Length: 69
Image: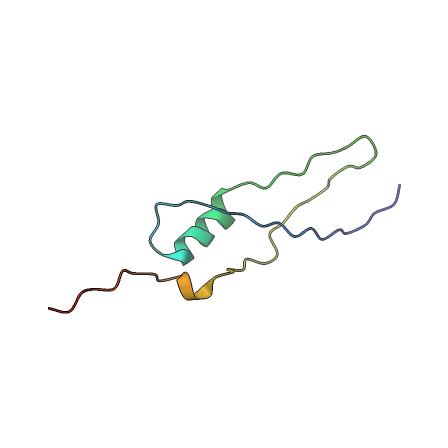
C-alpha cells in the first residue's frame, strides 16, 4: 500500500443567520464536518481544512443604502 497526500478544493455555498462573514467561516471551520469515506481501494486516514477563502469580498459587509432625509 502506498501513502500519499491528496489536496481537494471544495466550494461551499451557505445561507446563514450570522451577520458577519467571520462568524460564518469560524462556525464552519469549528463545528461543521466535511466527510470523505474509504473506498474499496483507499483508506482515508485524515482530513483537515487548510484554507478558507471568500469569493466576493466586496459583499462581506453589505448593508442597504439609506435614503437622504
